[in-house]
Image 1 (cartoon, one colour):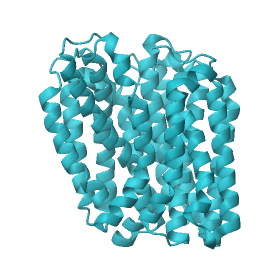
Image 2 (cartoon, rainbow, N blue to C red; image 1 turned 180 degrees about the vertical axis):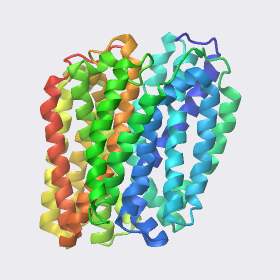
Image 3 (tube, one colour; image 1 turned 30 degrees about the horizontal axis):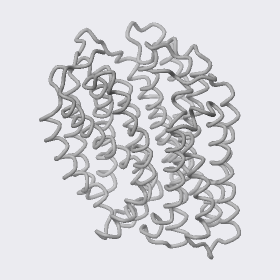
Image 4 (cartoon, rainbow, N blue to C red; image 1 turned 60 degrees about the vertical axis):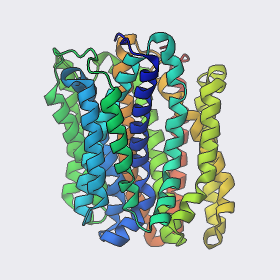
Length: 462
């Protein structure tokens, strides 16, 4: 992909627009976890409302990512980026004005789909507008900014809920930011971005993958509240042969959704499992902690959000260390270290909850949250590079997009599956439910740690 001849100042403005869009996406994928109880109290609905609000967004985002990169080649990256940004902003408005839970969940699906259209085009545009000698310097702050946005989401949500007295503000804040980014983007984004009109989409593969995902997520979220009727088990069972059909379709397709050679690499397949387990555990743990503190300890959203500051601080420090020198010096051991520390932090958190319960304070939770955040932060930066360590230059782009999609899908399944376990256990008390999910998340981290040894010893070299 050749770079365009753009003034460097304009290239930096392009990067600014892309970063703003990415921050909006990251915040909206995490911020709703904290607001779930407030949304349910205002709009009604059962426990599944709390699970669907984050899961609807991340599942739609993951599925949209599968095709959006190639769609940019076909339709135009600038056009799709601006379309995605406009749609994301309008669907944020729809979320903020939602009269009921059904409307909100549909709006969240649209938000996720438009986000998935926008994000891949932004990455491609940044690679195009910067000459090679400046591209690496432009991308250096990208990882830490996204890491900070991820951990800042719940804290920002608590502040907005307190300041404006309602959950709608967490979505409506996107409107002025989205409009400003769209206007700036329309002015600075290049019109010619080297599209390839010969690109084709594997609609059959996309359809099968979407169907398999829906067959899994819908019963995971709805099953417990409906008493696990037979159709929920049937849907989950049918998702397996549909995935098999997708795999068979990919092998025969001349324009596969996933580069087939990637799926023949043990390291990449193992990497998908590690990424899925890590992010599912992370999302499930965050959701369970928010629910436990608000529904069990009766803390306000602001109190809950501020309690997560040690987690955010630990993550930010670790992201900075891993991104600047630690991953380069320790290599793959950084992942072992991060997952081990994060698991230890979660075990310490479960012990703290079990022994304090109604005596919990932000200070008693702080040490365990700091440790958990630090361990997680060590994983954020290097994990994709090591999963793609054996990928060729041709496979790296598709592999990175696939890993991003799996990360988002793991977020959705984590909220769905661990959220279901949380509410099933909540009959014994919200603290017991929080302890169970924290222990399960620690177990997933440890399982991922055991698999890290199967990843390449070397990271992807760009």
